[in-house]
Image 1 (cartoon, rainbow, N blue to C red):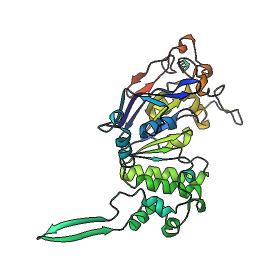
Image 2: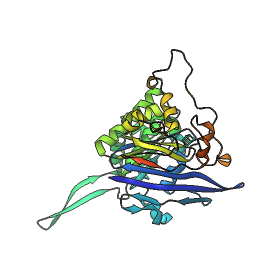
Image 3: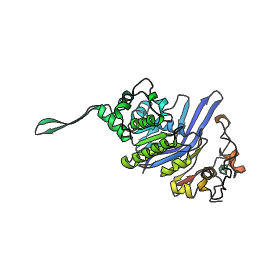
Image 4: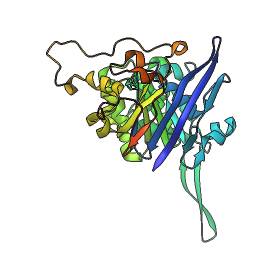
Length: 336
Ligand code: SF4
């Protein structure tokens, strides 16, 4: 069952040069309890999509969508205030560069306390034989320690009494994850959660996210430009290029039968995936660069870089869906 169902999400941003369509009819279908990778180069619009889901957009944005449902909630019908109320409870976000999102002037315990459920003293009262009995009292301090233990931080007291600048990026990211899970949200969006971290810390963070999904059945949407790392833990993947979602499917569908030239190019960058790659041979890259937002090509935005492009590609390709595998291309690889 889909927890998040987005169809034809578009974002237009008002700039000095006029309106720019930064996200063009992006669709995303996230199955409850799954790990979904949203993969694309830096600047492809992954963060903008996440911000639109969270309702974190500025006044100069125009966000439209044919459908935008979180469970049974129609996100397009909610006011900003109602949207803020579900943030944290239903959806949480883990940002890239965690140290810049934590308040440098506040100790960690103050920051974690601010996201704990309003009821900091959990008191369950049962009436037994007419008497009121206090069954369970849990201090917020205890809750904070529990959260830190969940994300693998053992030295809870020293961490809680530290400022963000006294901690490493890896620990700060674990704290962000602890804050994200404080309210048991149904969906966690992790935006490049391991950017600029050492390889060991990267795998720790990915293991932690995987554990969260497996133990709590938390749905994860992981935004990343690293195809190899993200595909390792993803059940489903959506590829995004220049504000357009180009292909979406299960891990197996994407790895074994990619239809879109962009997906194929990303797969070729994983050396073990390309049997024709020679020892010390040049790594495969698509020619050219990702275009800037104010110089977007007409039609399929991969056109100027696509080895299969033809005249018809100046028209926007429609989405083809086969057994849950969707792609947007006039000349898909397998069907030609
Ligand atoms: S529609 Fe054309 S330009 Fe776009 S990916 Fe397909 S072949 Fe390439």
